Image (tube, rainbow, N blue to C red; front, side, top):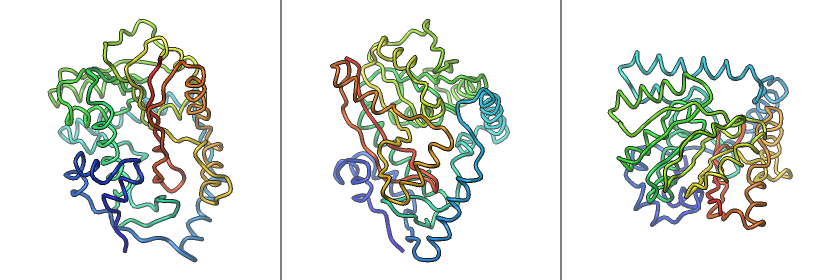
Length: 309
């Protein structure tokens, strides 16, 4: 068995061991990050399953019927949240699957813990929040789903003004229920559609706009949202999204991730669009990194931190 260490994680995130230890050592120590690398026949079998799933997958993001699916999905989380006496486990999206092989540093590995990917994401999210969101007074998460990221942010920086925005009512209702159940008066749910931004939305000063795997769902139709961001000029933007431009098509696992990304129709071009804005003098990129971990099929955790100028 191998052990993912604090130093390993710092390298993946684009930090230093000292920085990560100072910010996240407590939460890191809560989890089991042991794993074994899949090799030979076991690795081949897993890769074959990935290829079969790509061939058989029929899901297409960005279609109109997906709104019905997301409405139903977040409503299931809402019902579970109420039925479990407001347990935070009910806020974990169903697509974060336990007991699967995951991608780690360019290899397929089998973790000891069934929740290895989610646990590593929690450390990663804590580090991102502590590193980049300390100084802003308000945070707007677009495509917030269950609101779990805003709950985590409130635990780190209580008192910040928090807004959870999504395009279905069940997400808004769940965020408002979380605010009530957890006693977070600064948390509010809103309706917001990336493809038809609410121009009446008032944005607080010293704010940050964040996304976690939600821009991926609009199949590259982000221009109206990008214009919205440029007009509002938040102090900071933090996006954690699958980024196809980070893959190397000459590496097998990356090549398969590219195929899966395009099979589903996930967004392409977001990072290049921000890079072009920087070339034009309309944006400043503070950091951009592929952290080299993810699920069986793809990596969904590349980040870009930037600000409009």
